[in-house]
Length: 80
Ligand SMILES: [Zn+2]
Image 1 (tube, rainbow, N blue to C red):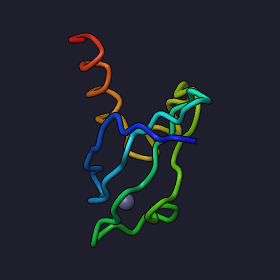
Image 2 (image 1 turned 45 degrees about the horizontal axis):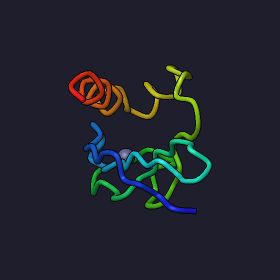
Image 3 (image 1 turned 90 degrees about the vertical axis):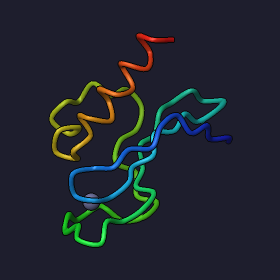
């Protein structure tokens, strides 16, 4: 399986999340790429998958602090 990096985003907690597309399954995966030095959120560990597949679960997205990342990506899609 190959991973294409779509975006990197700093989260409010200080972690950096990566937004990947996994080929050939064509699913999106959001994972923690770097742990923020002051982040206390459980589940934020390097390599930890935050979300996978359809990104329709807005509560989970908000809980993970990913609104900005998704907003950025939507803006990118509008421009492309
Ligand atoms: Zn974090």
